[in-house]
Amino acid sequence: MKLGVDAALVGGEFVSGDVEIDDGLVAALGLPASGTGLIATAGFVDVQVNGYAGVDFSAADVAGYQRAGDAMLAAGVTTFQPTFITLPWDDYAAAIAVATEARRVTPGMVGIHLEGPFISEERCGAHDPANIVDPTPDRLAALTAHDVVSWTTIAPDVPGGLEAIRAFVEDGTTVAIGHSNAAAATAHAAFEAGARSVTHLFNAQSALGHRAPGIPGVALDDDRVWLTLIVDGHHLAPEIVRLVYAGAPDRAVLITDAIAATGLGDGTTELGDRSVTVADGEARLEDGTLAGSVLTMDQAVRNLVELGIPLERALASASANPAHAIGDPTRADLTPGAAADVTVLNRHLDVARVMRGGEVVHEA
Image 1: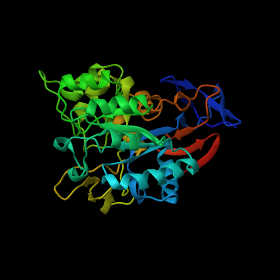
Image 2: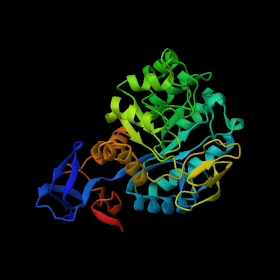
Image 3: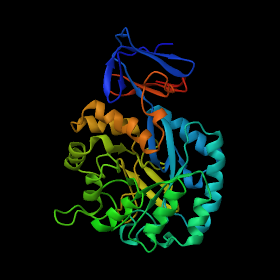
């Protein structure tokens, strides 16, 4: 079948013409254009999503994972990594057990992101400081024993933080640093220890200064590091977003950091064991602290374009870059032979159609 598009994003550039799909794979590019104005890109990948459409992953059952995954298709997301904020330690075993079963039966789910519990109380953000614990050998062993844990956020400045990074890296888990007050020297040490990402760059971490670059300055300067960004108009100023894309566009990864209220409008919801109020598109704790977002991935792409980021860069930040960040280049591009996970957008960058494995799974 043909996608009926006028161009496709391949290798960070648009290739004019239609795309053919055969037997679940991309078969050919550059066929006669359809004249519809539609464009195709590899399916969007969200590496940090706490919940969606009424589902909080840390408290969900298997059916909840499936409902949330289905709801994300409307935003073009074909691959997602459910995220747990810092939970009471005794809650992890049950939540991870459910996630293990959910990954087995939920299309597009690649594993879970543990955003904590080894983070800094100084930069805990919306995480409950009462749930933060140090990474003792027993706790590390308890978490690294589960292969469903694909990604974790660690503060390298907490006692045992660098050792925890090494343990997770040795286990094959992607490590991000975040919720941390680490100075530049400690951030450098974390990346030397194997950390390869920063969780929501600039948010809940040491600040960028001209003599004390903090986590953001070190991460921007290190070509090994993925830079995850919440571009919802609340977490980052426009100038900061443009600064990141001026210096490191190929390492920018859009995340939604979405919570259960996403898609449901204003009201009160849960994020882990915290109560969050959503009003006018902002999710906040009672004390005013930002608590995730109600951002969707397609809106994040549109927000980037409105800030002046080229469309090719914006789309790659939602597709190719996060696919490479999770270590799965097969999901990164629409090259011939690649799996046909595809998001099709109209002239307004609204999602028109989504395919997973060559099958249409959403159509507007």
